[in-house]
Length: 265
Ligand code: DGL
Image (cartoon, rainbow, N blue to C red):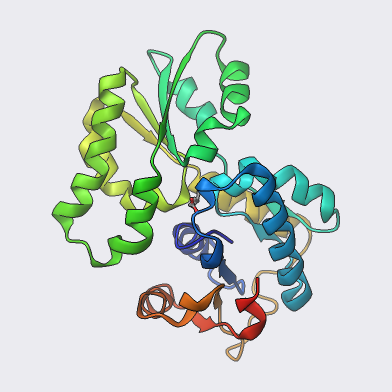
């Protein structure tokens, strides 16, 4: 689940690792953007959304494919649903700091994520003397969510370069992509960064974690998969049936579903 399209990058990467498992993607479009909500509001809406997902689909595992949701509500969700396995998506602060020669990294995410105590907590426990430059980029989340599917390569490159420039000016030698939406611009970030700024994300770690938990739980790969059970895309709110979401469903091989039950989430 994510507030919008960001988690689709993770769904796509996971499908490469294990194409057999049936997947449900929930885009909580009705509550987009998560990054401008308070922690308390996010906890409450994510508890409600999780209850609905569990009631209708009984998933073997839920991936919070959203840094904002994970730093804000993962602990509360685990407390409220002790019988459910959750995999969170958090900014890759530790690997970035470990590889940073200057011990100065930048974290790019939503306002809510970059201000969360999680960032300082991980940074301080990884390196005693380090600097973390926090870059809030709600505007970039919005760009990816609404504009990216129609943007040309110059527009995509410019969107990423702007934040590589901020990173370079700060003096950091590593940039953490701390929002799942930004993975859709990974190539553009890497190209603008060149050899002097390393770009980090959590996609590989998250996919391995999902697979490890499902294997440990003995959920057989693809057991529930039948041709009649397609991978589903649920979009909350009225935008569910829009042309943009139809495009995304086609691009990621998902069947767009919805219905009145989801419009109220
Ligand atoms: N994709 C979400 C994340 O990883 C944020 C998007 C939003 O603000 O809704 O933080």
